[in-house]
Length: 58
Image (cartoon, rainbow, N blue to C red; front, side):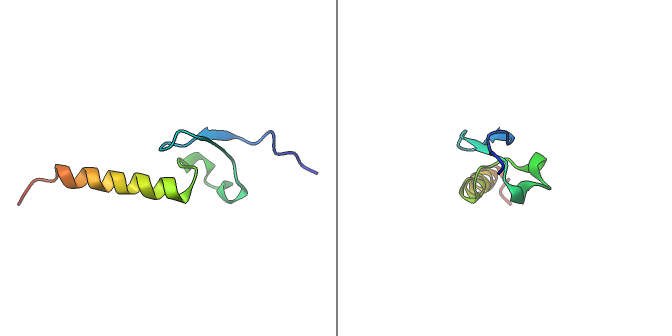
């Protein structure tokens, strides 16, 4: 039986909570920034909302 106490850990870029490595992230662990789909979606919406305010009027 394998123990899960030695898995790599990161901090979510949005909510600042720690999260651990998951098997589905095995190939892209270096690119993972968010702990959940909800945090990823929220960050994407915030980024898009910020860009809308900075576009020049035509």
